[in-house]
Image 1 (spheres, rainbow, N blue to C red):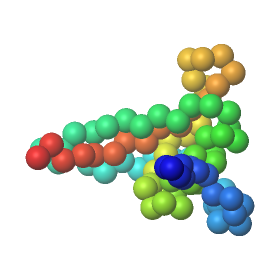
Image 2: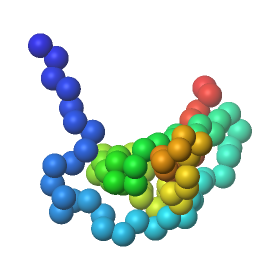
Image 3: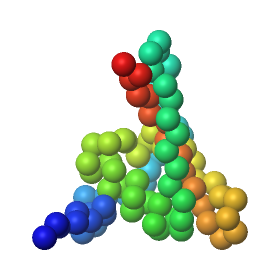
Image 4: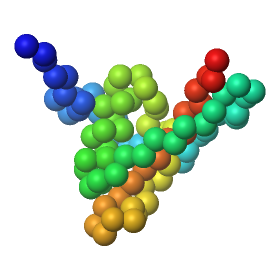
Length: 87
């Protein structure tokens, strides 16, 4: 049987309390492509995903954009740009 790993921390003390809301993208390099990652949902849901990704050392909370309204009514979003090698 396959076990599914939850994407959020169960320990609230590990989650950063006040994220900085300015993105900090790295400059593009040759043979690298920017990829935009979006998280869309409620503010609480978005914060949990961003914190979980931080705990897994995927991205610092400060690297994510400010929270903004999404095109879907009642939803919010944050974005992150990651550069991937094309080699």
